[in-house]
Amino acid sequence: MNILITGASGLIGRELSRTLAEHGHNIFALRRKSWQIPPYWDIERGIIELGSCGPPDAVINLAGENIAAGRWTAERKQRMLRSRIASTRLLTEFFAQAEQKPKVLISASAVGIYGDRGDEELTERSHSGAGFLAELGQAWEAATEPAAAAGIRVVNARFGIVLSPQGGALATMLPPFRMGLGGCLGSGRQWLSWISLRELPMIIAHLLQHEELSGPVNLTAPQPVSNRDFTETLAHVLRRPAFLPAPVFLLKLLFGEMAEDLLLASAKVRPGRLLDSGYVFKFPELDAALRHLLLPA
Image (tube, rainbow, N blue to C red):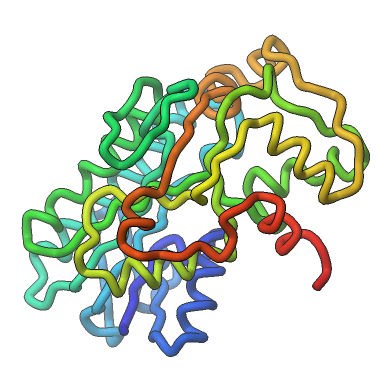
């Protein structure tokens, strides 16, 4: 397939591009206009230039500013919104009007759309929640409507916390945990829905192939864990103690709204539609996933 990817230089985009290319697909990265060589896009001016890469068979939209890169000021929240909604709307309207449309658009979303739900088991049928991340997720998915209305199969890929030592939450945790200074966040009872970076290309390939899948699909491992269990498992894999919890008041002092919406929120998410479609997880359990990511073969 000819596959166009936005956000190809990010953590997920790099792994996905490499793996799909190894499996024989032609990968084109849609870059910012500063590259000057198509394919590129200029989101502010509403321009997409595909050049000689031709009409893609599939589009994978991963563009968006890192939500965990710093404290959520009003300005940062607006940037997070713009980097997702404006870019997705431009992309979907462009291909909705194209003479040759892609067969499928896989557009990133996140399990943050469910909000803080305690011990409730969440599937794709669950309603969205409250809070900034939930509102962002709803607007992000709504931005794909022009493509769906034009007859393009749209998959709203609701990513769980992506585990990789190269970036994201796990990379941030590793230095203190390796020094024996790790610990759970707050009470540790909040549910964490995760997915290994190594699993994601296989899931995306599954989504490309299974035409019955459209709309929201949870990209999480089938066994979510509590923050306390995650802490203990990571410490065990690294053979380090983990007895220094981060109290709620300190997390709120350091991170403000991000602490409540991201670090302390609980989402027990199940990948119901992936399992129903026959996907078999290579890394369904946290211990094996972390060992594969962190320990030498």
